[in-house]
Length: 133
Image (cartoon, rainbow, N blue to C red; front, side, top):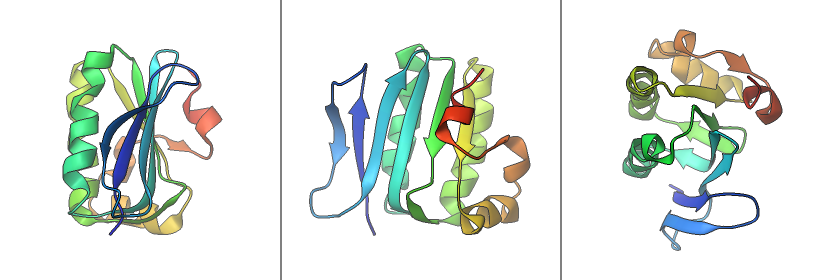
């Protein structure tokens, strides 16, 4: 299972949020205007779920209006992680933050659909599209 999170704030600056060097792949989070971008690389399973939750819990503190989770480099999303995304979609919306997904893979969309949360999210085919208004 691969997991790491790298937080990038502002253009060109990188800060490590949480990282496990023993595992390849990971997640990176970057600020673009009033939007946070989180790139998930590898597998998002039960082992990586606490890191995803920690990153999403920190979103309101950043003062952004949207967070984009980019799954294009993700090989697997577990059912619990998919359910958590649905719950975060609701929680963040209550705080005025729009959670957006870029999946890029039918397998990931299938898991989101299977647990009943895919309909909560607009479909974005690219990061640029998800970063739009």
